[in-house]
Length: 277
Image (tube, rainbow, N blue to C red; front, side, top):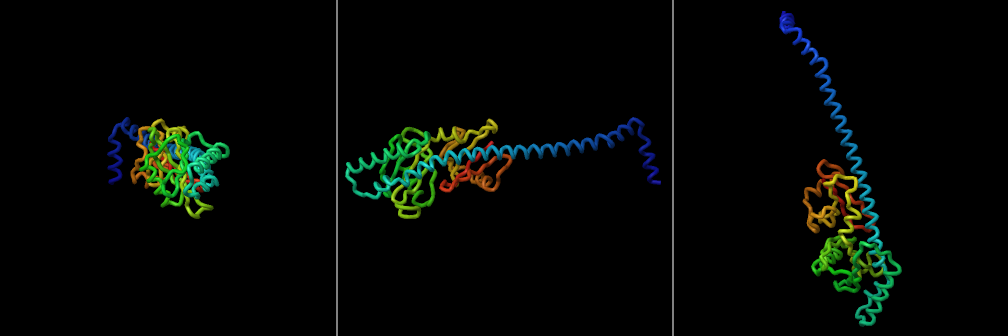
């Protein structure tokens, strides 16, 4: 009886209204569901494709960075294993004549035997007391920056990357390494600092090719200190937010921050390159 009353209740609508309701139930509702499902599938596919494309781009940037940094590692290593430099550091109390002769030998060795990257602006060798033994002389660092970098080299048994500002108002990346007497882990007799032009480094390595115009790629230390940035408005030498670093260390892709880890070579200091949009 109730079913018949319901049926009669539906029949009280006009034929036009019933046709509209039937059309809505048969075509519009399923079509809407299919449209939403198709949009969801398309969005997921687009997101996955975008993620893959960005990962490939960051991988290429990472390889370019590794290649570029290996040049400075090679230069730094060549200085650290130079017998001329080791002999000079081990020989205490040299006369001015002996010191000038040693420096001339080092100059000849650097010019004739070492590949010197164009972005490298200076080579400085310090003894364990913090005194300059050899300086190529193109630019200078402030004493506070030198003390900070040498302190890190004393504490950390690995290459050290740092940011500094020079006398000539240049932004500089510093690659520092210990000089051992004979072999790794033996007595430390000095330190080598390679000064790299940060502006040229950022143009060579950090240009966000293939990414959005608003993108930015930064080269960071593991403690979050910004060493270099494609965006020139970013203040170098400052630390990024801890939240950003936590996101970066846990994710290879996230919607608001696209992150790519810099894979170091055997002697490189562990660092990161981060691209934010």
